[in-house]
Length: 112
Image 1 (tube, rainbow, N blue to C red):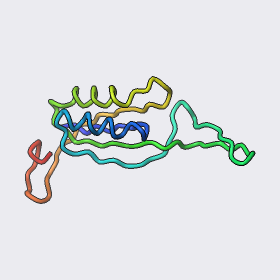
Image 2 (image 1 turned 90 degrees about the vertical axis):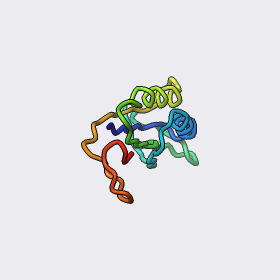
Image 3 (image 1 turned 60 degrees about the vertical axis):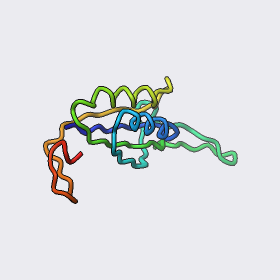
């Protein structure tokens, strides 16, 4: 089992969610987050005053998946979240030792 964490641009969320649904991903946790990477924020002009926006809005997706879906999930996220511009995001993959469904007590891949 794997935990896939993806940080993407907010306007790409619907496309990514639909793509994940199409390949059979049953659950995704989405959180609104703010951060910056190489783009280091940007400056904006508001009522004649310039100010720096250090943290940009992003969406954090967390998916617990079976090992067999990993390549498809990575492809689905990268293809739909890619704009070709700086700040498209990142994908992190880590191992899950154990998963337990609270309602039924199922564990392992069956709990996903």
